[in-house]
Length: 173
Image 1: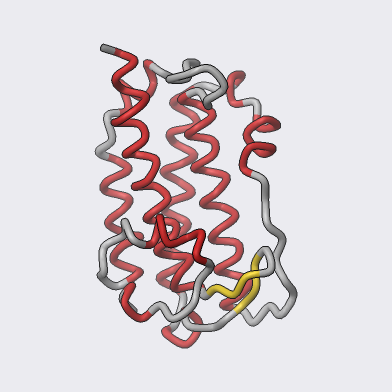
Image 2: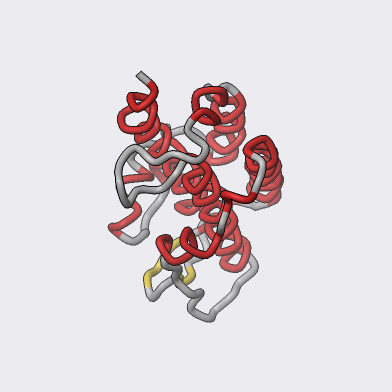
């Protein structure tokens, strides 16, 4: 199912969904692995323990945030696809970042973890039928579908790549 088939999602996610291509969700998630693999990991690693400004996340914290967010979004997609009726909890990304402590981790391990999480996400979305993708559920008190969540996963990644290019990488100049 394509992005154009999304019929409901929280307005907050519009900035991510808008960036994702209007292709089949399974194709979008799978193609995003190629984008992930082709990142300039050397530049990103050079910023591993630096932030582009005071109070902003380091390169490792940004990468950990992307990993955590993908896990949360795909968990929501799984729950809703399986018919969960309970409202799934929200999360405070700043609090998660504060408690993630990626500074003690090796950048290469974080990179590998992100690649593995994405591969698992691809398998998850490939397992969903069209009916499952269109099921409605509630997360953080807002109605959303697994279809929308798939495009949020892709768009969230693209959103942060733009931030890397615009704000982080110029620090290296």
